[in-house]
Image (cartoon, rainbow, N blue to C red; front, side, top):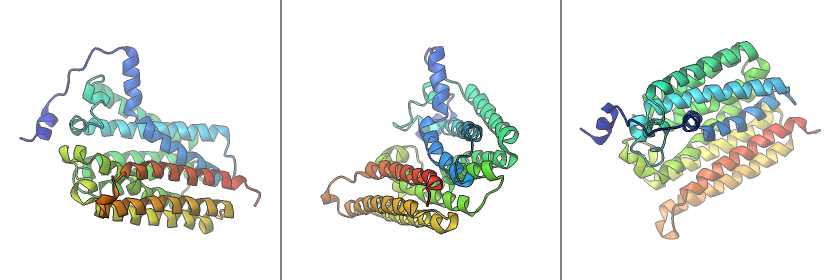
Amino acid sequence: MSDRSTLRSSPGPAGPSSTRGDRLRAYVALTKPRIVELLLITTIPTLFLAADGWPGLWLTVATVVGGYAAAGSANTWNMILDRDIDRLMNRTKQRPLVTGVLSVRQATVFAIVLGVLAFLWFGLLVNWASAWLALGAIAIYVVGYTMLLKRRTSQNIVWGGAAGCMPVLIGWSAVTGTVQWPAVVLFGIIFFWTPPHYWPLSMRFRKDYARAEVPMLPVVASSSQVSVQILAYGAAMVACSLLLVPVAGMTWVYAVVAGLAGAWFLYGCVRLLVRARNPERGKLAAMKVFHASITYLTVVFVAVAVDPFLPL
């Protein structure tokens, strides 16, 4: 029996003595707040673009709160289902269900409450289109990615990453009650952004994923092959960001910012590929691309947020 099978069948650590503050911090950790930051980066600008200006304080707050609850539910389910492999990975071995600060039962109740709250919050306070999209996002991440794809295919993050694209559809529908072509293009930007964002991280933690028998692309392919795909998806991402100009009627300001940010990011991807093919040039430094991807997405979506307010 493999280490992973043994861990999967074991009940898990009994858990140290914890204070109320420890448990509160653990509940927050279940929602993966660092990931939810990306939700804010993409959702709020989408609200501005859909409203062609300020969408109103209440709608903005309601959409962000509902989005956090939906993402928190999905992320909690992810930690519940992945607790066996989380114990094997240095990056995740301090998560609450591994350390035992919270029990699986507590996390399950928390995930259910957050999911129901998100659905009803959107439905009753925003609109039902956003509510169903939020429920769909949870299902894609939990069932599509965590349960079906993550442990079975090296393309797991590509298709499972669609859940991370849903906040722009939710934000657009929160304003308009529907999904229109600009929202689809925004979805595309994040869809193509996800592999160049996540695969460099997977390259950095390749041994962790290999130990846990998770077939992330960097585990089953060479650094050179992964770098080629990172560059290809990055190019598609930049093209999609420029497609937003005619589709959403963006100004030249957005076009320039998106073009320059895209060129800068692709330069980093090319450097990664060159080093992957020529190890004598130095360390791979994949995490530089990971951090650059966050900067890129932030810059582009700030430009999306500002554009509707420009007198052009």
